[in-house]
Image 1 (tube, rainbow, N blue to C red):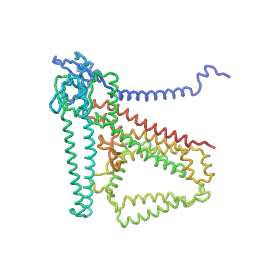
Image 2: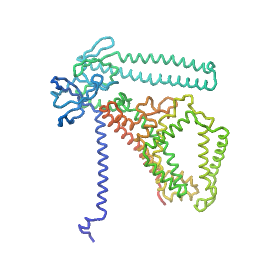
Image 3: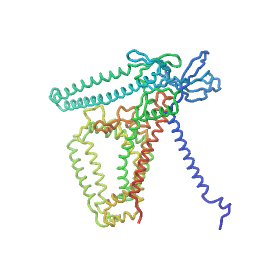
Image 4: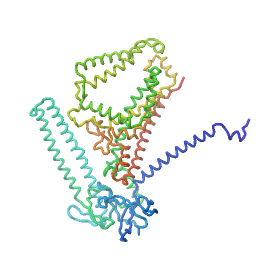
Length: 619
């Protein structure tokens, strides 16, 4: 029988379906709007904009000129209660004006022009400079006026030479001089260890180390002199410029990173400047309180921390999920453990940061540096160590013994099965007591104290903290993946003679790997964007060196690092020049989103490959 129009109009549940669709559409629109806002404001930072020169009438009736890049137009409230339109200009030249931005009333503007001779220079200090070039003065005193045909080519040649010289200077100071400093510091610490161990200050070993330090110091002094010569060469050539106010100033060409004329750029020229800005932003180091330059250390630190987080959280999460799903008796205790795991997912991230600071940094880090503060007396430590070895041996024997037939049944659990968790818990407790209360361990870096090595924030402790925070996500996802493996696959493996562990290792776990990867993807996505725990466990505003480099031991887990999320926070709330930091906030946010998307896409492709490889069907 066909339904009437009124019956079709009142189909049960149809309104709820449309409401769900409308909610989904609203969510997608909000996400798309947010991404478009970030993308638009992030990309426009790198696009070169025209520079205007304004003739402005001041309050006393005098006229003046000012050049700048139009940032925005807005209304401001006057003292009489009305409103006036004003524009915000990026004027640059902070060394001349004191500020890089200026507000001008629209009604005070008499004229506006865009002179083609205006030049924008990106500098190492004081931000960008806007000026009319006057002449280039070389080191031999010869001058080249800006009107000369070869002026642009000569200026660009000087800038290229300065950039190459600055790159060599950076390699010299951070590379060769830094390595000598590290070697001298290591030898000084070795002398300190020898003297603390009772060696004579005039002994052969100490004397040999001091002779080596003297030779290294000579090489250090030579390199320092070479770096001073390079810095002096950066100060040789000068560029005389004229500001829009008519003032003439002198700029060192060695302090200019990049220079171009915005009002003369064609579309191809603008694309070239755009690509230059993008490459510089992604590959160079920050400068000027992070408001200028690039963010490569933050990109690298975020990438390394996210990969380290995934490597740390995956084994612990998978092992815990396998035990809870495959081995633990599904009783009250396991239900309580699952409730605790689920509740951990809702704990604020700053709480994990405080825990990481107290346990990892001040606990484990201080122990690695200088050993335990109050060790057990040897007469007590030896019995504890012997008890630990006995319990460890018992745990291994209980774990490898073959259970009798039918022992898997819940109704026929033997004494050994009941004893396993007790012995395992006692083994862990005695092992921790034996390790952390050892009277014979005085730390790996005791000679460096009171300067901490691992007893302060670093990328290892930050990654461990975030791994602990995202652990519930991996555990829950892995448990669901293990439960989704068809029962027939397990029974087939057991029927072929495989043990329970062989079944899990070779059949169940490979089939569950796509689900495990889902948990890892979610953990990486959450961990990459966290900021609060990192602020107290190792992230810094500016890191002098990377946690991963070509200097032995190549991976420096104790080093502090930069992070894109903290970089955004620092620019938005801690920058001394908030106006100059605004564009960098959107650009850094866009880059953080792109980095998370790239990492997730790589993990998703790996998950798809594993799903195709280990796909199984139920019997």
